[in-house]
Amino acid sequence: MGAAEASKDGDRRIGRRALLIGGAAAAVGTGVLARDELARLWWRTPGVEKPRKEGEVDFAGARWVAASEANWRRADRPDDYDIDMVIIHVTQGSTASAVKAFQDPGHRAAAHYIVGQDGRVTQMIRELDVAYHAGNRDYNERSVGIEHEGFVDRPEDFTAAMYASSARLTARICARYDIPVDREHIIGHVEVPGTDHTDPGDHWDWDRYMKLVRRARTTTA
Ligand SMILES: [Zn+2]
Image (cartoon, rainbow, N blue to C red; front, side):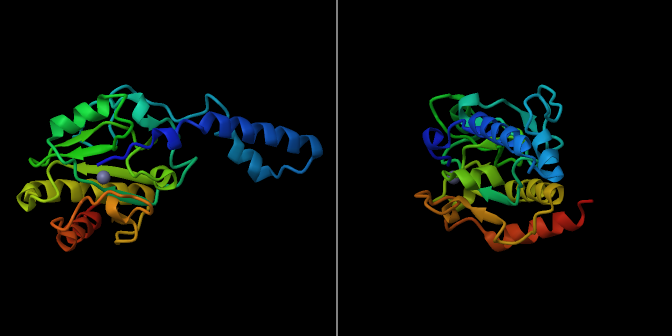
């Protein structure tokens, strides 16, 4: 489940960027800006971002359905924010209902991915961007969020196809950003500081899942 948090996680990036560039200009004026600081500022210059293609996905085979822009924030990860975490969620509904919610600008929350009980992966937000899924600004900025179709109190919802597919997805994300495959970096929404969400719940089999991620990671180049 995502959390209604857009109000506190709102789009402050432009403000922050303007502040940084403004600060840098002031620093250049006094001649104290180091060369590496200048290099870091380059990608913060408006217009200097990675090329994007409409409908492009970060996980091969995923279906692309765009989330409402109200439910995420444009970014340029991992250059502006390091990605060092994957956060596991459960939708409390069907994939279709989650897709609909994430397309709704009033929902104020969405995850990057939804994994269905049939193992099918839907991507709704690019990994470059910050999705509002963790209910915690810092955790949103540093993580990729994966929803799983089903209900926390229905263990039968967590199918073998879902576990296998999600594990491949998480393994790819860990490979891409060099994230350690352990429970400090692959966590449940319930483990995010300050959250009142309980997903993925007691029926999510972490031992099974981590074993699958580790196996997929070793076979992932
Ligand atoms: Zn959640």
